[in-house]
Picture (cartoon, rainbow over the protein chains, first blue to last red):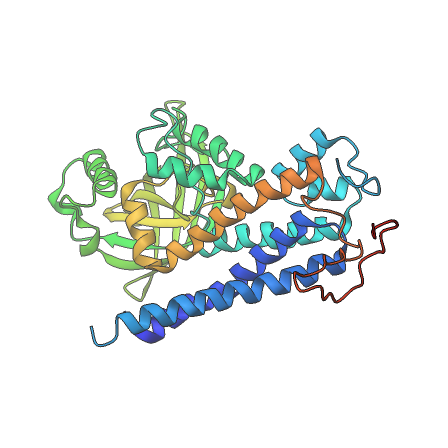
Length: 64
Length: 313
């Protein structure tokens, strides 16, 4: 699979993570500003975690 | 115990509504912000996945042998989190397996549609019995691995008119007229022995098999195999045959997995939303002031601890 195709797949991670963050935060709190703040924080955490996983996997598979 | 500011109304009704349509339970409770979040996010994610997979992402297990395909059962269990579409696919599965869902030579109402198909002109003279030939074509459609002649036909497209009629013997039949082109040449043909594929199937096209005759002389000219559009509600959520599943994979490749994941994640997220509709938010309302931090080990603290009376002995 080419890198470009792989990047295409990863683009779908963003809406999926946004939805998961928003829904998860909405089930924790009732106050809208708190839900939105929490959702943004969770979204950033998910993306950073996934990027870290991507970098580790890319490093491990370097020159394979 | 939920915050007293949150009116859950009847939590059971809210839970069922939230399960059937994401967000509906919260709208019922007057929690419009959350209702909007759940309906746009969960329903949006589910419908996106479903639509991108040509409305074939929701596949109910075989009702005759529910546990035969455990992978399918697991996938469907995740999708069952969004109630209404999943339940509809169960209804579709029942309609699909019903004995009345069979190839037919009868119509309830006239059909007029644009179509694309193939015209098997050269094949006809070699076959004496038209009924046998139609039977073979239908069999070939169901068994693609076996030899069948559709790929040897000439491309045909145009307008097809199908009308229910009574034959001289009093039986119901379909009167069919074709106007269009065959291999780019304009043709008009009268069609006999028209047979339609099952009405309920996962494919967006419904095949019609018919014997084509010259309109003036009635001379047989060949067999027309046409595809007319199938109504949306007759194909969405219908179980797929292995062949239809292979075609779906061929069209979407690995992206199909992404669309499936969308529907599974939406189903699982809706379980959290149902819980929220029944019990309220898991932590708190969310507008409480932040808790004061306890003094650290070295005695320093960002907020002063309250003075305890009589602490000095």
